[in-house]
Length: 153
Image (cartoon, rainbow, N blue to C red):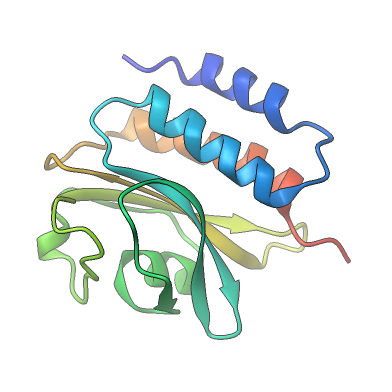
């Protein structure tokens, strides 16, 4: 079982006061990918205009651009809410960047004013991989990283 409290402490140690958003996202995705079992992708997409653009990640090559409102990532960003999908093949408009993915969790990343500037996306090759405990732990993880990578005014 994943110790999300320990993982949060590790992340805080990696990113606290590090002024390099790309490096912070790279380390965060590596930490997730290395510590959460049964994943095939973990990483970030950042909003540019009306689309999400691929950021640092761990896993197989991924979609480079996702329109806001499309797929799990685009929907989570557009609706500013975490989406947990037990079976991605049942999600309307799912974008299959990796045909091995079967379940997914996407957490919006928010600036200080509450606006979404990106998402943390995690995929698994098994159905129903993400439970409520995972959701809470990954959302906490996202809150830590967003403080260090949010666009500054």
